[in-house]
Image (cartoon, rainbow, N blue to C red; front, side, top):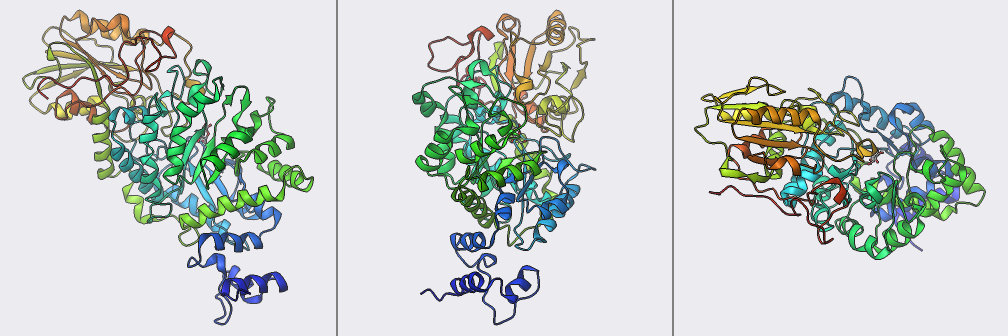
Length: 619
Ligand code: GLC
């Protein structure tokens, strides 16, 4: 018979109901000196013991509450307590008002205090998409999107970006990041191309170092450890036509060779959660795919964290709007442990309870889901450090993180054309003309998932535009003239720089079924600069390669800048040669949209191959 304090406490609890001392503890009163410590509240016990002790105290409703994640706009702190909710999320752009770091910390603590006020005092987790910095928060450092980080080929830099992001999250309380996306983009028409580190599995696999940056060497390793999420499982980047949330129709061998390896690597690095993909594989929605979620991810890859659905992802299972009890059961039985039910979470709770009571979902599945979720909460240290750590508020948008971001921007620039060494800009170039809609626009250079879900043009958050960066790096002795449309350019200028590209977008709103060419406005701006008969350098700010084939011969220089984020000076660092260009293409650059999907090894001849990128002559 095991007479350890934990076991004695559990037997006393199970045999006689809740001992007074324990009830007092759970109600927040001090323990009587003689009472056995409550195992799950004692971080001296192994996680597994704490999980089992807590699970044994939980009712079915306690357990169901841990498995549902409402969106913040549809739940108040009082309901988090009443329904024993285990997690709340901010969907893209869903922020407190005013939107600043301190307001976020206050909001987080409000939900957390409610959760801690429940009888078992199980802390909640707060999920955000901090996919290129803590990007919902005005003033946060916005790092280059993943496609630019893939161009750096620098896993250690990416780890450091994860660590910086985790610090900024920690100051605001947010302790769960729905990142990294480890998708392998195979068709650049996909609206989430920029969320991919590259078109071959080796790139996202290498960049899973960001998980270590976010979580630490292991989850809970230090005060700024946050839970990371490898997403979207599996094959979201391989759908036909790049159709977001579409169907990936490939043999299992290709799924395993191309799309699974980054998840294997993420699991090896101890990622605490995985998000299921909206997409389908050979006609079966991932959100109901028990083979891939339970057999492959959990059993074959040995994933011991928990699987979260995508936002209202279970609604899509039967192809009809909304969700049914059958879809709830299908998703949970497939192996989804926590369900992101943004609005109709009360209905979900009722449906799942009924499904358990009706035998459609076994209690063993509910317990397994809770074991997985609770283990991450214990590992994260949430029971010991449940509230926002306001010591880190000062890191939000701080100089150190912005300097790191600027280095990442410079490292992500890919020089694809440099005739007559027009780059780096000559120290003696006295007069520089800058044009283009993406030259002086933080919103355009940051892209989607910035302050709002879709992102937006304009001065959406503090930062340095590419034009401001050019002015800073050019220094006082030079003339830098800017006109968005290029008006006023003439032969008196030594060089013209056209900063052009895409409007911000996210997810399916960014899917392109057109010709992937530059906009008419951008082409007109470039033509005006060319008419001045001076060298023209085009800097492309986009979430993917675009069709530049017919225009390229008229350009003297061409730089793929991707979506650099708030630190636009990093682009100027490369244009002026303060930083030598080292970026290399993370995707094949198509000659036209007709070549899509185009990937290394597929026998097609791109305009620029995967890995292309020029150094400067003298460097
Ligand atoms: C979105 C995205 C997913 C994100 C989630 C929560 O629809 O597909 O990447 O993490 O919802 O915002």
